[in-house]
Length: 560
Image (cartoon, rainbow, N blue to C red; front, side, top):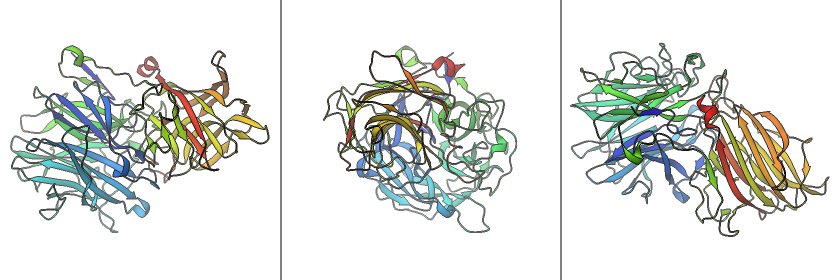
């Protein structure tokens, strides 16, 4: 039997929305303050997924000034067989201060999953997590969380549904409040509608996107309800099956719900798909904390659970439980599509004009004005810009960390002439939390110098006793990340052995729970990235040339 090993998409790939079109499966995931926005993954067998691109590029989204963890939330992918169009709904979270949670929601369409995509069509600002349902009578409906900001009312609000004109984004009916959740976990969000055997099924996320997270479901014979909750009174998928009463509780962390018997935590926010052979799966988010901690450096990842319909018409996990599993039965496919493993290693020698599509940038879009492979063939040239504390225009090219144990290497040439010009590589969570091994001009050493700079909860930390003079501006850098510890290596000549610059730095705080946030709540929900980049707070005219970028994961150790 083919088995699906979770997570099927490791690293930052939360809020998965899954569809099948003919023999192809697609998943869209959130990207928050990272651009290009909205990742799209493709699979033939549900076990082996590859990134085929991102949707929100160029002027389609402006993420400058985005606070963690705002930005692009919970994309919902759907397919209208009548028009043969792919539809993508998403929220752009603009403000979270004062728990106002101001978000604008949009829809886009394309005739091919890889685009081109239409201009964003504005739909509503009532809340967040929109989803589009295409009914078989050619009507279309929008479901979304109506955010509750009034004192004395149950937060976070109601799930609401309205008929919508997809061409204009205009509502064709009033909003109908249909539920505040189907269990006592509360925090109902991410509503998605399905139709099966004469019933409308409403699948929602609940319990907050932390350790009490879960997937809930209800059904109705009318799209506007009333919706009958699942008879168990509990989530149909979760990592924490014990009962939780948290109605109106704003704490998304729910750390008391940590399950010590499971590698998989935080399972929730599900999306349903039917296979070609009539089998059913739910894609959902999950996290894997560092051992003996509640810190999740890889963020929220994507997993799959096999489902079935009970004789009385309810959806449940195929094994009859509601505890999410790390390994589940897969679909039977022969030939090249039967492979169940795809390497997450990355290597780009920048020999092509188009660089690897895994590269993402925080807060700003990528364009040739500051990053390209044209000006210096066989290199990625990055022009320095603002400090990495900036949420405006940092010059960072990064890829998702996908493993607890890996090696990350690069080689660069850089010739600064001012102390505020630098270039190098490092580990990055957001503008307040990163580690940066960089070349810069040292006036005291009167030379190009290698050193380490760190940001921790917004504090700038310089490793003043770890400096090496690098006369010709050429350096090889290597980070060895191992379960929350990072060692920085360097070598000046390729023929030389690696030398240690900083040994076993504790970087476990570069995790969802370790970054800036209110006590008791999750600080973020994105994940750790590896990056190369440059800073120029002098004249914005210096640049670094990177000759390769390589990430090699320690698969054996991670699977142990």
